[in-house]
Length: 217
Length: 244
Image 1 (cartoon, one colour):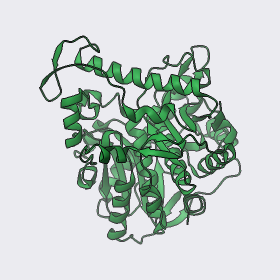
Image 2 (spheres, one colour):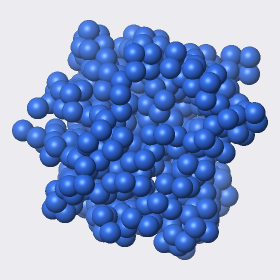
Image 3 (spheres, chains in turn cyan, red):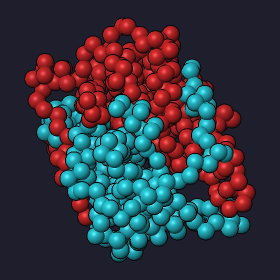
Image 4 (cartoon, chains in turn yellow, cyan):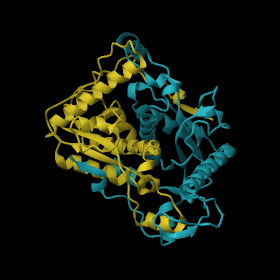
């Protein structure tokens, strides 16, 4: 099956997963495929994927609560009179076989770049803590490439995937809640498993037309 | 053939052939990428600008911006100016003087069949989201110029999803693609390219990525082999994927 057919016909946002847990081999293989085929500027891969497995229910609930609080906070910051109670489609963050949270990571140059740094005056920004906030856009683009690749490999194995872009970007929030292994900014979250209930496709909830997004100059 | 075989075929291009991709094919692959790319609240808060074979002046300008940004970054970091002859210490502590060389990896931004530029877009809510805003107290950041910077990380991520989809579809059609993330990040850095502006009054733009398309003549990996330049390896998987 080609890229278009695979994603057009098989990718659906999951509201609730079944209790069945995909095999560890399938998850590990999909992660390996994504790592292997995702390109990165200067081969830095300045991000890290944390895998929270079926035994990490308590941690997933902590992350879910932070996500919900963030949603409510954003709604109230934007509209002080908001009656928002959070996002009803976030349940997949706490109830899933596997949760992946992707965080920024300080990179180390490989031998090739170490040599370039020394010979050609190259500045390797991915290795400097002070540069982390400045390069966040290019790292996030790469996380998008990685997440898409991972999605394809999981869906090929009939494992469903759902995304979450509503979370606190401040790692301190996670540390305060007890997740002390989170020491850098989260960039994205996705879950996987076997879907039981998928998000309904509402007639009015459509994306902008292609002509609004793609502009020929 | 699985999807992994498709993505294994992607390589960074140093030089494209002079043969252009037919516009109809470019339109088709872009449409398919648009169709399969999800977006938070269905906003897609970005534009994909397509700069075709006839727009060489724009490509030249974008390439110059990449080189300018690279040089500025190095000069700021080394506290030296190109060709000033003054010695300084490299990141590894060795002494040298500084001469700027334009990275050949940017060549694809200048010479290609089609160049794509991803930039910020101010959105309008669809009917579903309008109801969420009116009835459920939702705040849609994607509608506000003032939030462009605040949501730049999630928008970048979504551009990455689009770019990866497009890359897969292109490779399946025998089209090569390459990425570029090195360009000025300031909102006022693109005064001469109004199509990029999300705020026309201030002439502000937020560019997330450049991506070129064409038929490759010479890849970077070939250049590495031809010059006996050794191996340029990515970090080990264990450095990137951590089981908690």
